[in-house]
Length: 261
View (cartoon, rainbow, N blue to C red):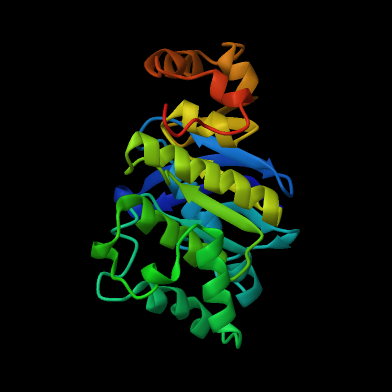
């Protein structure tokens, strides 16, 4: 579903050029959930933005469902891959109601079943009619992130790109959002690529995990191998040590315990 072949992403030009991602190759199969971990500035979120078409890439090739995703995306490609951002308050228009936020992508793509789509997607993310005409500041952090997920789902994408979708939330709310994402993936057959600095969060949702540092993909391993410290790169071992609270039981459990976080 997603293929990155030798992708390099550069910010700026000339002497001030900064290579954020260098020669990255990765594949994500249809229906699979893959995570990217690494320190801040390692290039994780930049990869997601390039896949979504929000920033250009300088070299290599990105394909979505077998079709090359170039600098100018087709309407179908933009519908196919939708992104959920880290900060749900910052990613939602503060002067628009939930109804207006969800109606915008429907209008942009000229879909004619907007009312049914809005009602359906609010139900899927666990929000009721009472939330539909509220503004973002009238919602809790978890409710705002549910709206952001609903906005991504309303075009019925095949790929969800998740940029640390739980890092701005309380621990108990993180568990609720992760359980929601797991259910949506199962119900809709979604392909997911998720970035996070939290190994327990990544391990709960993703079968394979790529480790990034300084714009390079150092290794791709599995959640189980990482939990058992069966990794090959020294940086990955350092990352495991820095995540001392990595909950290995979250890998095999069906759902996170909301009460326990």
